[in-house]
Length: 330
Image (tube, rainbow, N blue to C red; front, side, top):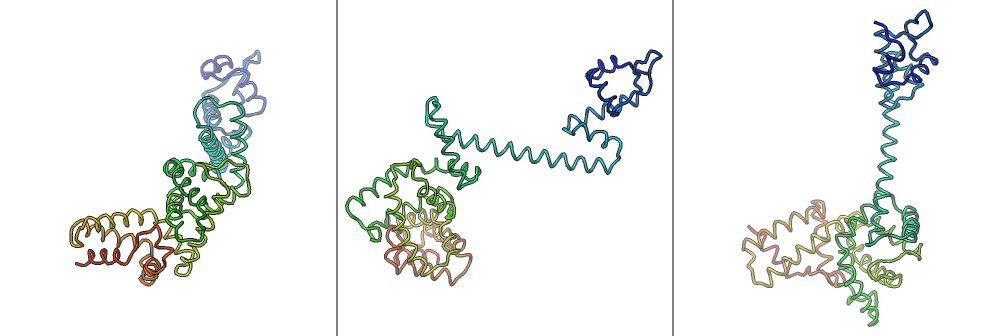
C-alpha cells in the first residue's frame, strides 16, 4: 500500500511542508510517484520517517539524521556520543543557572515585594561574590548561615563591648569570645578555613559590601588579630594539616567538654554509666581528630593543658582530663 503525501502527513502528524523538505534534501525520498507526479510513500518510507521523528525528538540535528540512518552502527555510536555530550553541557549550564537564581533568591529573601533597587543591588552583590566564590559555594554558604544566624548578633555585641572597654586583642580576657567566634564560624562552613579566609579577603577588598549582624571592619580587624595570637600558640604544637583536623571537630569538642563539666559539677562519679559513655565518645573523637596518632594526641593534650591562652574559653583542664581518664579505665 502506498500513501500520498497528504495522507502520510495526516497519519503521522508531520506537515506536508516538512515532507517536501525532507524530499528536497534527500532525507526521505518517496518510493514512487503517480502518473500526475504526486509523491507515493511505501512501508519502508514510513519506517524511515519514524526513525527521523525519533532522532529529532532526541535532539539530533537534521543534518546528522541522514548519517545516522544510513551510516550503520558506527555512525550511531558517534552521533549519540556527541549528542549526549551536548545534553550534558546543557544540563550543567541549566543547573548552574538554577543555582545562581537560588542564591539570588536567598539574597532577596528579606520579606516584602522587592523593588527594582533591590534587584539591582542583589545583582551587584552576586557579581561581587562570584569574583571570589563559585555559585555552589555561595549556595552552601547562604544555606548554612541560617543554622547559626541567631548566634552572631549577641556575640558581635559582646565583642564591641570588650573593644569599648579597651580590652586588647592579644589579651587572655578576649579569648573566650574569640573561641565562641571560631566555634560559630567553624560550624557555619564546616571547618573550611580556606573558604573563611577568602570570605575575609572579600570583605576587606570590597568595603562597600553590607556586613551582617552589626559587624564592621574595625571589629573584623580586632577579632582577626586575636585569632592570629591564638593560632600562633597552637602552631607551636600542631602543623597546618593537624590544625585543620582540629578545626573540623571543634564544635563536637565543645559539646563534649561542656557535658564533662556538667557531670563533674553534678558530682557524677567516673565509674557511672554517663561518665563511661562520655569517655567512649571522647576516645572516638580524639582518634578522629589526631588520625590515631598517639604522639600527636599527647602534643594536643599538652598544648591545652599548658597554654593559658588556649585554656581561655575552652574548659580543658588537668582535672577534666583526669576525670575522663578515670571514666575510661575498665
